[in-house]
Structures are given as C-alpha cells and as structure tokens.
Length: 452
Ligand code: AMP
Image: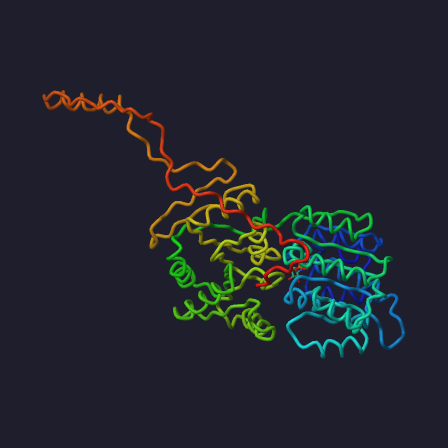
C-alpha cells in the first residue's frame, strides 16, 4: 500500500515526502479510507502508530477541497486532546499538511494568556486543536463559534477520561452541529470509552491496530529489582556506565520528578523535569533542548509526557512504576519508535510488586529481570499470570529430624537425643505478605483529575 493509492492530493503527497514517510502505517492504511467515506470511526491506536497523520491527512484534504472564500473563517475541524504537549504535536502536523492547502490551524490550551488565542481565532481559523477546559472557556465567552464544525476528533480519548474531562467533552459536544463526522482514538477500550463512543459517535467503523509497544520486538523491556533507597544510585549508575545520552525518565509525582532531577544534577548529569507545575514556555523550551540533545535526561510525569514524540529515543526508564498499568504501555511507547530499537527499563522496589503484577497481567507475560553486580540482588516475584507464590518458612519435618539425629548418633556412637513431638502441624507459615494495592480507577465523571 502506498500513500498515492490512498487517494491523497499531490500537495499532501509532497508534504508526506517532506516528512520522509515512505509507506503508510497500519493505522493510516485502515483509517484514511474510512474517514474519506465520511464514516464515524472508533480506532484503537496509541501514540507512536502514526495516528495523527491518519486523521490529519484526510481531514485537511476534505477541508481544503471546500475552503470558503470569506476572510474570517470559522473552525470546521476540532481536535480535542488531553494535554498541551499533544496539542502542540497535533497542531504542528495540521500546519505541515494544512498550509499546502491554505488552511489555517491553531491550538488552544489553558495555562497561558487567553487574549492571544482570542486574537488568532478572530482572524479566522479552519482547524482548532484544543484541550477541553480552555475550549469551553472560549465557547462560553463566545470567542469561538463551533457551529460550523464538520469534523470532531477525540485524540487519546482514554487519557482525557483519566483526567476527568468527560463532562467537558460532553459540554463541548453541545456546541457542535449534529451533522458532523466524529473520530475517536484511544489506546485502550474500556467501558467508559464505549459509553463515550455510544454518546458521540454514529454507527462507527471500528479499527484496531496492534499495540506495537506490547508486542513490538523493537523495545527491549527489563526490570531491575532494587531497594527503594538505592534507586537514585542505580539510575545514576546505569546512565553513566551505559553512557546514555538521551534518557526519558518517568517519575510518579511532580515532587519525585523534581527530587530526582536535583539528585541527578548533583551527580553531574544534565537533567531537567517537565510536569504541570512548570510553565508552558519552560516545558516547551526543556523539550526542545532534550530533542536537540542538549539535555541528557528528561524527567517527566505521565501527564506531561503524554503524546511526546521524540524521534530515535533509545532509553526510557521507569524510575517509579505508574499507578495505572496502561500508563506503562504509554511510557515505553516513547522508545523504539518508527522501527528504531529501544530499551525500556524499570527500577522496581518490593513495595511496587503489585503494580508490576498488574502490568505483567496487561502485557500477558513476565518482563525479564536483571541484576547489576554493584547492587545486591533482591527478589521481585515473577509470573503475574500465575497465582503469586507465597514466601514461606517451612517447619522442620519431625520424622526427618529424628532420622538425621539417629544417623548422626550412630556415626558418633552416642545415643540419639529424644525428639520432641511437634504438636502443631508442619504447615508453612506465610511471611511478609501484603495485600495487593488497589489499582487506581478512573476519576468519577465531572471531577477533573490531578493533572501532573
Ligand atoms: P503519532 O502516532 O501520530 O504520534 O506518530 C508517531 C511518529 O511516527 C511520529 O514521529 C510521526 O512523524 C511518525 N510517522 C507517522 N506516519 C509515519 C509513516 N507513514 N512513516 C514513518 N513515520 C511516520
């Protein structure tokens, strides 16, 4: 299959060429014809599969064929995304393709001055890429008119639900015309995604592309069992000894991202963090530096990292495992992209065992463990698919003890001491068993999640 055979305009083929894409990815091959057929689409695909171009190309083409002549154009395509970073990436692609057909696109997200966005919208726009909250602010102020929207894309819909955007999305939908084409992209297909699809999509075509990061041979996954207190030392060691020069590290919270950043800087490793407490301009600058190789380590929280597209990223480290197993898949999706080999390493302490088991259950297999000579090996149980085995201390078998003593006595010539009868059964005692930590469920609708 070639891009030409998908029926794309020569202008877009040139744009694709400028991106050095030679063949369409599976999501592009499957989604583009459906979108051209004007069907609603429910697509199971995650970042890294080429999903952005899969919806951007046909939308741009269809909008370009019918661009109104008036100067102040109202938006005709709306892409809802969970984070600013993803908004920036989608918007960048919309611009690359859109400018070939004289289309204007813009992005709208919170945390920055609204006035500049109002001015851009006022000048006339064809495509808007937005996070739901700020878009609603504009809709409520009347600074954006959504009555001419023909295409609605929900990108990374599962993440939008995780972040509690459900009410905002449904609210946005009220501003949109009934007659429209809706495309929903989600890495996971949960009950809440199904409900959202039932609410917003009209007899959608369903397509699913392989979860490349779960099955991909081009991402090597390894677990390094380590005590919590030695994680920092281990990550420093791995980075320096391995001479890694571009490492994306995931921390669970903003606090721990900042703490680790300070520690790595102390160790002389050029590091910076991105999370929602950092200003948008600082996040953009940091990401740019990391992409250009001016920063050795980027420490990120899950939300801030969503949708990050950093080409040829060789190493991703889970400094802490995520609360939601699916986030592991998103995290390791940052490496091994577009056929490049990549390594995903997880530093796992004993307290994280339930999280590791949940991840392995999702992956339907155990991740190989590795120990480093400099760090005392500790055991993190393997085999989430089997019932976890209990750590046990066995009571001695009285018959065996008696036989051993008798044999020893015979050798020494002394009579064997009388063995005390063991009253209690010889059942194993379980030690150190912990209750499995509850896995986090999606926030209730209406409540915004903690955007880190
Ligand atoms: P996405 O899933 O949209 O975030 O895309 C992931 C990465 O794949 C981005 O770096 C895209 O530029 C790249 N990409 C998208 N389509 C193709 C293609 N057909 N061939 C090669 N790379 C692609």
